[in-house]
Length: 326
Image (cartoon, rainbow, N blue to C red; front, side, top):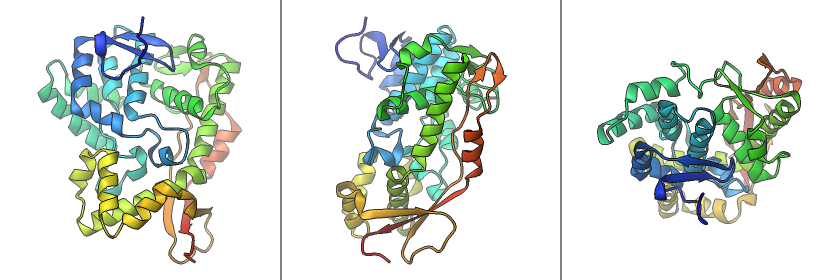
């Protein structure tokens, strides 16, 4: 049984996931991976990216990765390749996760492949090619869903976010006991499938809200300024933690004022969406994709017109202005 403190260190060789209420007996390889900086760094990367500044969604990429490990263990405890892949699937993420994706030509999937290959040289027992193949869906796995189907990675994302925002109806660990996995795709009874669809839709709406898009847009501008001036290199950004990025932002004369304002009074910015005229001095951002994967019901694809409407609303163009800027 887990102890009083749920740690992310693998102490005593156990990970107890508080969301799913799954106890994972860690393998020696998993314990060793939790000791590496490549994995440990994810404790200092917010899963929600910039929205961690303005919402209750403050957990880390490491907590999410351990959550996916717990789900793999629940459905396929002896699939050690999938377990390793679950723990490593997010190691390429930049600080603030998807918020800074694309800046400096950086892309987390490519960075992840590089990090996994580097880890394989550092930690015995990792077959980098196999882990990458599973992560990319080129090898059938409990982590690989049918196109458009809900996979374990996104199941953890939707429920963990839903719990943080108070959207869940059924306790996640109770819901987990009723779900099935069919070829890597989450399969559910009709009522549970509807609940999962609601969580996916509300997550998509949250990602299009001002609480998410204002800090995302401002952070992209601030970090972009550092990159454009050579004050921060893409390589340094890729290996940084969020506290290290903040330290650079508040120390640089070009970004210090706005960086401090974003942390202290993010309400100073306003957002508008659409293709209309953009105010002078506005910061621009475009949302080009959403995560709207749905479970199957008895092995059959679930369709929801709300999902189709959200998909039709992309790309979503955003303009963000600060008080006093017109």
